Amino acid sequence: MTTITIGGLFGSGAHEIGLFVSVRLKLEYVNTSAIPHIAAHANATEEAVLAKETHLCTWKERLGHILVKTIEASGNHSGLPEAGYFPGFVDPAHHLSSPGDIRTRPHDIPDNEYFQAVEKTNRTFAALGNVALTLRGGAATLRGNSIIHVGVMTSWDKRVERVSRRLKIGRAGAADYLTARQKHRKKLYKHFLGTDQRDPEIYDFVIDTDRDSREIVVQKILELA
Image 1: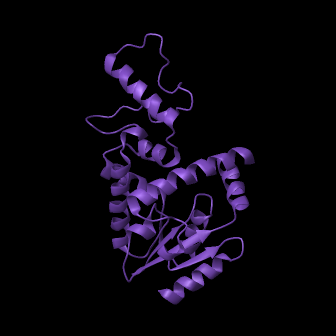
Image 2: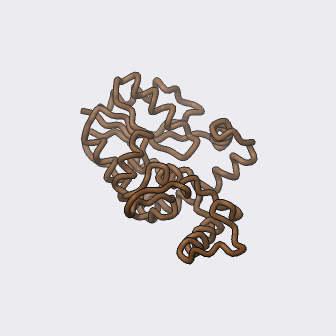
Image 3: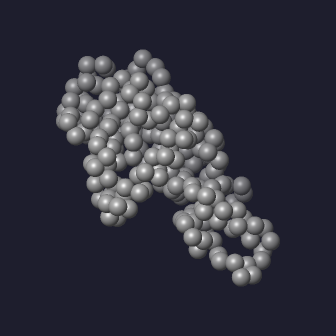
């Protein structure tokens, strides 16, 4: 049974490569289907996990979160804006309600617990075998003879173009988003996983989507499998 992880910087095209590989090699493809499992391990709603994965945590957002929590605790909204209206504070899961202690906001999920939930989820799917995973930190958290790690790289311009198209924003906005996300993710990966997504040493092989075809990925996987 073969498990393949496909990873790279946001906008590199790992998702597209993952889909192609799973179809060509008749593997189960796992990407967003992992969200419910991560949410369960993190004791959070799926919406909160999705928001955490797509949302950058800036100082303005942290301040907004603290203010919101203070307001809710006191029950006093005198003159202060409601949640979601602080500058730079976007929290799509804020208005969700959930029983018990289930976390409904991305800021309520500590980074360390999020990465622990991701690692547990990675291991769960990897144990199934015959899967292609484009999961967070797969190459750093999964090791074994039956696991093949593929790194996907591409040029900055291609990443900007892809993110601009995916998020339906201009190139300048896409470039700003990528810069901020890359800085944020690099810090988190280094702290919690002890590695960098750009480090070729964590992969069995690396492809450049500017230069290499998707068929080359399949060929290299078959050589290693």
